[in-house]
Image (cartoon, rainbow, N blue to C red; front, side):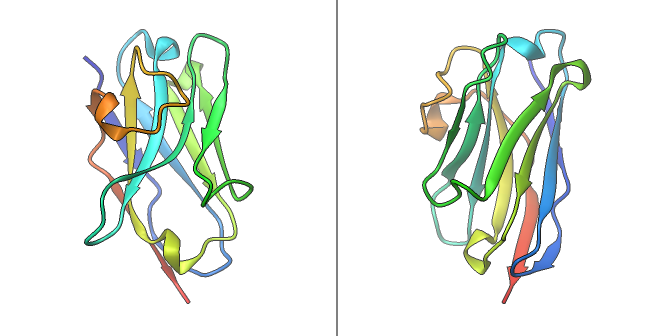
Length: 126
């Protein structure tokens, strides 16, 4: 069982940057693929980024954030980060952290992740 808690969402102006954090419980954090997803009002939850576990640290990004967002993890702190730069109003959404032991980090389907945080709101104003 893994519990996830996200931090860092807030209101920002377009062009700003922020870093979201997701702290995980559990002693086997390093073995889990960690993902970030987001959901805007009236839209389906969509993939943002993922990072593999087990030392490989492969990363995958949605086309909409590639070159602007960076995912990273600190296994000693059982935390995964999402650094979001050059934010746009279209980035406004609730951002969710997700974890799964078996999913491939290149798999962008949210239904393949077993564990989810409660979400943190990011609002970008123009």
